[in-house]
Length: 378
Image (cartoon, rainbow, N blue to C red):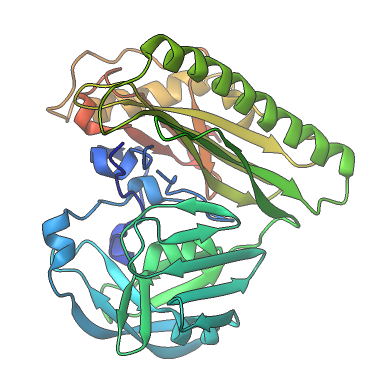
């Protein structure tokens, strides 16, 4: 199965979705490798990996431009070495220089070219020259390969900041990027794995498990809900693969799942499982299963609950979405209303609703996303 990179980056000033902003995601940015990532998201606090625009192999092969970035960290202006990709869509930062300023620990294994960064309830390992170069909290993910230049490792900046729970805002006047730490929930995340891969079939599901909550009953409830969803989609995919049979090709059939933690703050944990089923043809099919939890109860929150129980939440969302859909030229069918069980997740307390490939847009458009600020429901 062809693995598609999904963890790339955008410049800091462009990584902020605006109210009701309609995002057409490039397919390479949303497909999970063999299935993505997930963004990925994967990070312990905020994953916008699925929003990042993926570099083409031709662009990635070109030499980036190296430069220093001015960053405001804890009220002090720091100069951090970095780089910009040839297409100007991906910014990189030198991880040791930035990690030390943020108080994160960095370890380097020169024999295997592996860097490991630890802190703020997250662990990120990266290996240059590897087709799956990242491991975040135990989850192996694919993405834009890190740079190793003169003994310095550079990572996509947005991916790095999301992993360790920082927001970034760049001042368009002076070019200074201010980093602000999110107030993370008191928990850690580890990765559960179901791996039934053979030489004729790829079958690997990675999913999050919550640890460290003071209320173990709530923790068990959340983990049980996630595990039940994973078991459900695993069973359904086994049936699909059994029906498809042996591909008889060098590229095997397969089903893979990665997860993205999109919010881990404010007493809420929001995520989605993103799968990719391949049974032949030009491409497989990606899908998402979103889950948003109240950490006080372990309950799964509905869209209306996350909208402050506003009785007119659907009408408010429909108005914003319809306005944005009318501006697009990739729409296959007219939009009228979100569904009763409209999928969504949270990002920085804003609601992000999305639609599946082919639901309203062409397959290559990926998952159209709409960011709805909480303020519109007040």
